[in-house]
Amino acid sequence: MLLIPQRLRPLPLPAASTRPHDTPSSPSREPSRPAWVAVLVSLWLATACNLPLWREVMQLPGQGSARGWLFALAFALIVAAGNAALLSLFAWRRVLKPAAAVLVLMAAFGAYFMLAYGIAIDASMLVNVLQTDVHEAGDLLSWRMLGTVLVLAAPPLWWLARTPLRHVPTLRQAGHNTLLLLGAVAVIVLSLLLVFQDFASTMRNQPRLRYLINPLNSVYALGHLATQPLRMNATQLLPLGRDAQLGASYAGQARPPLLVLVLGETGRSGNFGLNGYERDTTPRLSARTDLASARNAWSCGTSTAASVPCMFSHLGRTGFEARSANFENLIDVLHHAGLAVLWLDNQSGCKGVCDRIGQASTGGLQDPALCAGGECLDRVMLQGLAERIAALPAEQRARGTVVVLHQMGSHGPAYFKRSAQENKKFLPECTSNALQECERQQVVNAYDNSIVETDHFLDSVLHWLADQGSQAQTAMIYVADHGESLGENNLYLHGLPYAIAPDVQKHVPWITWLSPAMQSRTGLPMGCLQKDLADRRITHDSYFHSVLGLMDVRTGAYNADLDTFAPCRARTASLARAPAPGGTATGPAPRAPG
Ligand SMILES: [Zn+2]
Image (cartoon, rainbow, N blue to C red; front, side, top):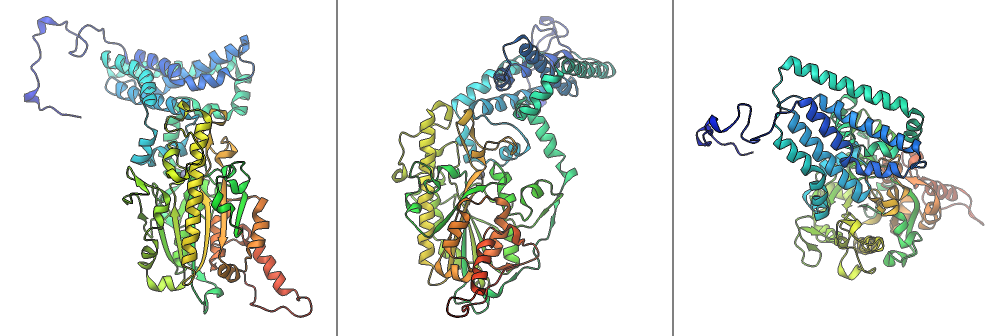
């Protein structure tokens, strides 16, 4: 805000030209009571700014009947009264206008994203918003957004700006506000009583609706975030895996292990040709016979901010959501074990996961073939990767190295930016970030091209790892953080609350590759992994334990029951114990981490 020093401000006009209660901004308006302004703003919020809600309510079964209309009317009254109850807390002369303006803007932006992408607003969606970087925000901007927000927010903001508020003595204002609050509560109770059965069953069967109630959804989510310190001590970081030791496989190793963890972005398992998609989106990976693709893998969250910390946690989804303090994570435990760890980020950062080891970012690179507009395709992460690894402490590298490559992957809505020209197999592409402006097939085309790009990237990682084979025993695990909606039921993007999110937002690709040296080192033949992982249901809950198991890190934090690779390891071990036909078992003794 620009502050004008007092002496530079224009002098007030002579009082003769104005009436006594006028203010310069409103030459002819009667001042309104704050409580009355609060009521009118509440009505606007409940009607115009809740179009997405009313659109869904109108589609409920039974709508159109008298009972349906009564339900809709009562629901609208409840929403309006809820807004009024909230505004009654702010219905003071100096704070009402800013508070109302903030609520109107929150509701207008919320309504736009609900209409455009079918999103719903909860605490984790707000975390996504707060963690959005400039590039991601730029991907979302569109004329349609500006237009929608203007239509929903400009009329009430204009009216608020032009309406002077009457000065009411404090005690009397407190009385008005209390009356407004009590009146709003009474309206809610009476409306509920009128349609209680329908309301209770609708809210039970359509849990999505409550995330659409604007702007109370955002206010509730903000409150949830603000009170998080009461439920969880966010400043505390509990140690984890400080007992971590390297297992027997490291003793006298010919070459140290080098594991690349590709952390995928917005991968839909069903859109991978490798997983049976009718389009060949993964020509390079499908041509390989040395991969194990887990086709029944499920994410921990529906957004990067929710999934990534949860994947690297030892707690699993339920435990992570209920945690009362933060723990160190997989990256820390690998580090405690004495391994070299590198986090390379081609996206918006590691969401706190790599805080103790630091991260390198490829966002600022200028490669003309792979970078444009301040962003690079994921293959850029392989440029100079060997040098980045060589810069890690030699003592740790001699034991082994884990590298995380955090992809930009298929980050939406600007999918068309996520593939190089050579990988645009499916045309025409939607080239707008306002996805609803495109035909659905064009959106799917652009998304599928981003999977072709990821196919190219993963294949490049595997080639790069093959080149390291003389110095290291190599492996790669690719897992996406969450899936994506591509217009099914008018839903786009991701981030719906887990309980109501469609499967496409939670069903993720999980691809494992082990070099022959790594297969014998870990006792995990690819043939076994391919069979075992093809259809078995696995989740991000097992990511932490699977990586520790693969790297033969022994710690109390490891849980063999959650190690995705444990069944094959056990099978190999029991085969090694069984006498071979015509002789006795030979070869190295089996081992199990943990
Ligand atoms: Zn993500």
